[in-house]
Length: 92
Image (cartoon, rainbow, N blue to C red; front, top):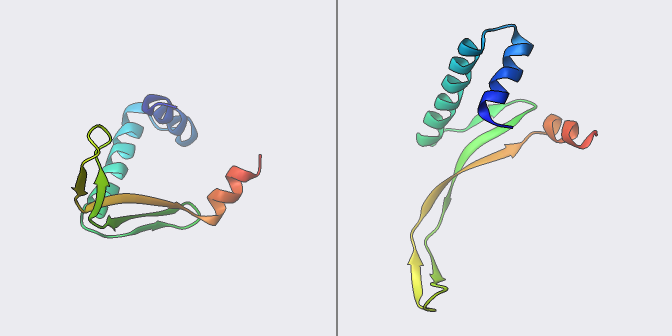
């Protein structure tokens, strides 16, 4: 599903215009991104949690040359699904 299809789905369920729904969705995603940039964790009960994890510096190998290289530390966004969401997905 693409973003415009998602906006249409949410607009139908909320009786809001597509334009207003898109603004709300964009604002929510921006807020989640801002929280994660600050290192904060967002927990949406029943849905899941958004947080960041730091992946330590490690050594790797260039597949073309075989040379050992150092891969820098990275901060990654992580989503962990909540119990209610897991149960809903598995309920087929």
